[in-house]
Image (cartoon, rainbow, N blue to C red; front, side, top):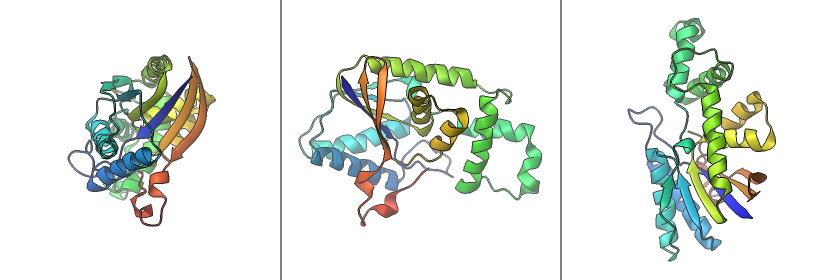
Length: 228
C-alpha cells in the first residue's frame, strides 16, 4: 500500500515571455504547502517531478519549508511523463484551423480568461485528432501518462509528485474512467498547488482527495488561490 500525493505547480508567469517559472505568488503557495506538510509531520519516502522549471521550483519551495522543521525530503526523480502538454501550440494549431473564431481580433489571448476559454475548445479538438502539425498527438499524451502511473505504482510509502494540470486530469481520467469532456473541465479547474491524493496497491489507484488547498483556505491566504 502506498499514498501518492500529487501537487500541481504554483502559479506560473502567464502573459510573460517565460511562463515556465513561478511568480512570487507561486513561490508563496509552495512554501505554505510545505509548511502545511510540516505541521502534519508528513515525511516522504520518494519524490517525483516533471522536467519543467515550474515543477522544480514548486518542489524547492515545499522542500525549503519542510527543512525549517528538520524534515528532509529524498532527491527527486524526474519523469518526463509528468510534463504538461504544449498548450500554447495547441491553441495556435486550433486558431490556424479556425481563425474566424477570433472574431476580428476581439478575443484577446493575452487575457487569461479568454485564453483558457480558447484552450478548452482546442483540447477537445486535440482529443478528436483534428489539429494539424502538433508535436504530441492526443494518444501519445495519454500513453505517457499511463506509463507514469505504471512508474508510480511500484513505489512504497508516502510519495510526493509535482506536476501540471494536464497530467493530473489525465490520471483522473484513467483512475475514474472519465470521458474526455469531463477530464478537460477538471483540468481547467486545477488550482495552483492543489493537492490530489491516491491510495494505491500495485496498479490499483483509489482517489481519496482532489484539488484541495487546505494551506490556502484560511482568511489570510485565500487571495493566494489561483488557477494559472
